Length: 421
Image (cartoon, rainbow, N blue to C red; front, top):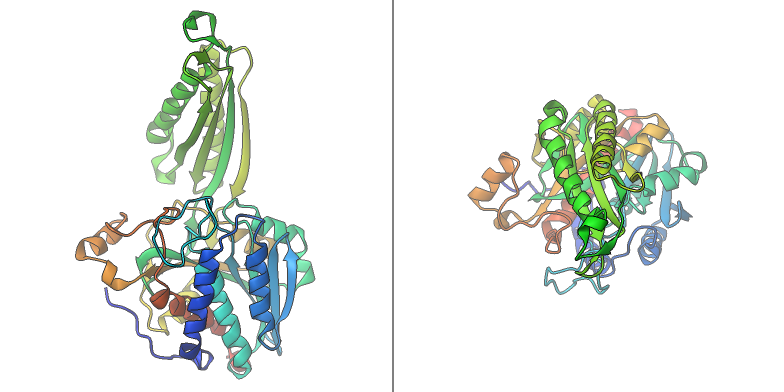
């Protein structure tokens, strides 16, 4: 796999190389100051300041809490919505970078700092070259993607009523593969996700007399094992249901049997039918196991932080791939969707317009061995390349930022060609 060409391919890219040092500085600043969902105050202020430095952008802060929306009107033509998410994760950074997080317990471990910087760079180029396009661009800097609430919050705050309604919604996500490579697919691209909080009730007591108690911790362990059996043996394999127990909280000391146990589960599905079937199975298994323990109270099961299925419009995906290929970037059409989740799809669904999401590489090519490339092709994590959400994950800005900016310029031009070509 070779690195993509870096030659200019469209008038919109004129002057971009001269500005890349600035965008690397912006990226490093954002990476050093990560903020969690709905607390992206510094990030939003920095975004707004960058946008107001460019002529023509109408900037609105505080949309959906901490979101920023900027509109650039340039004559008659379609409306293109470009989205970048801003929030970080509750992860302690261990990259050792000189621009590592200055916030204990917080880190841009999913590349949202790349997304923000790439969109800002594209916004600068669009403002600087109005003769290269026609129409309207709505740049959406979204909060709280990591908890699946940001897109919904912006929609509930009037995103589609207060700003031009889009004809297409476009977004991208950096990933742990060679810089410049773009991967996507028509149809389902990323799983729907649901988090579930399960409270199991027991009857606590002294550790020396378990016969007088109902141990919720043992019940929780049994439930976890039983749920994993469901995911491995009962869920339809063609729909690839994924169920993970991410947390189990119970008890305080060794010699006390606790009263309750709490489980946090993550469910990933690729169709409405699979989601409904999984929910029913999860509830049935938990109730049945609890009844077998003769619990004093039935379990409580609450779903939260839902992520919609991310589905790419077929025709719009073809146009996106064609546009990105004009930059010289290699593209790859995935055979199956990712199991990770996004809330980007809520925007296109609410607007009733096509939407396309894609992933692009963020790791320098010299960090990939032949073994690493082979691992990518079979869907495995390349050795020595940390995955997103890892405390060691950090894209390489030098090759990644220009790729992210150029992707956005290419797809915007596809819809907003001068003269409606």
